[in-house]
Structures are given as C-alpha cells and as structure tokens.
Amino acid sequence: MTFKIIIQQMPISAEFEVGSLSEAVGILQEQESEIRKLGQIADDLNGTPEAPEATNAAGETAPPKRRGRPAKGADPATAQAPAPLPIPGATPPPPAPAADMTSTDGGIPPGLRRDPATNTAPAMVAPPLAPPPPPPAPAAAPPSGILAGKIIANLDARKAGVADGGKSLADWLASAGLVVAGSTYDEAINAIRLISDDKLATVAKTLEVA
Image 1: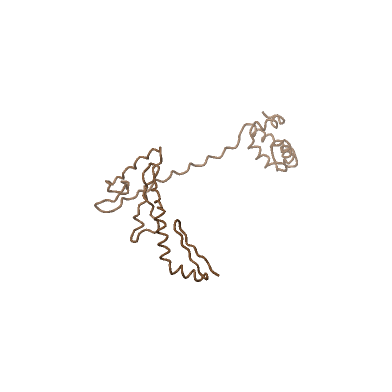
Image 2 (image 1 turned 135 degrees about the vertical axis):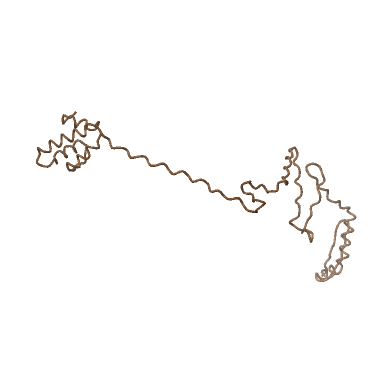
C-alpha cells in the first residue's frame, strides 16, 4: 500500500509517494528546511502585500504597537503612557496651570511655621471653653387664688360640727372631682390649695363662698 503526500502552497505544489506514514513523517522531518524554502518562494511569487499602516481619527499615521515584553533594562516606573488620541470635533481642554515652585514654606499656615532662629514650633493656644449651659427654668408656681383659702376656712368650720373628723367633707370634694377618692381630710385640703379659682367656682358657689 502506498501513500501520496502532497505539499502545496499556491502556486507551487510538490508530491511524493511513500510506503507508510512513518516513512512520510521521516521524509518531512529530513526535508523541513527545503519545504520552508518552497513556502518562501511561493510567498514571493504571490507578492503578499504588507499590512497598511494604522491611522488615527486626525488622519495621522499611528506608530506601530509594540508587542511582547518590554526590553530588558527598561524601568516600568519611568515608562510614559502614549498621548491620548484626539476626539474629532472636541475642544481640547485648557492646559493645567503650572505649580508654583517659588514658595519655600510648602504652603504651611503662618501659625504652624517653625521659628528659623530657634527651630521651634509655635506654642499651641487652647481653644476657649464652651460657655456653661443656661440654668434650668424655674418650676412653675402652683396655681393660687382667692377662693382656695376661703373654701378651706369654710370647710374647717364645718369639720368642727361633724364626728368623722372631716372624712365626709373629703368624700364630698372627691365626688366634685377636685380630689382623689379615699383621701383624708388633710390630703383633700392640701389638694384644694393647689387648685385655681376657675375650677373651685362651683364648690365655692355651693358653700356660698365669694
């Protein structure tokens, strides 16, 4: 059994016959350099054109891109990035103002600069203390009026004529909504002292106190 091996690269073609595939591999390995020469001759005959140079948006020829690793000895820290390509129709930004290198104090505020004669920093002044908080507002004075004293005097006079020590009078004031139910007479009287005249008007009218 024979095998026909064809090596073709237009417009050149070469072929040979072998008895086995292992024989074909051996011939290809031995004649590798000659086969490469045939490929180069085919490229010359074909006249392969070179790739066109790339251009940017402004029509300028862009430099060819460098491929692979940077050259040995190049410092990546000092490598400069390529300038950005201009955008058609865009207004270029104004140049950045140059840094003022004439200052010798590095922009340090005057209050923080060292004294050149003594090489000492200025004394730091403590900020003023915050003012103390205002005193709390005085407690509201309990309501006072004229009717409370007159009602108490009237109730004291009535207490002398009852045998329960004024408990019935305290219950009557609780029913009127002026004191807490179950209060003693003294507790009821203390509560009456703190009630304003407008709330005592009904009781005062009942006791005929004016």
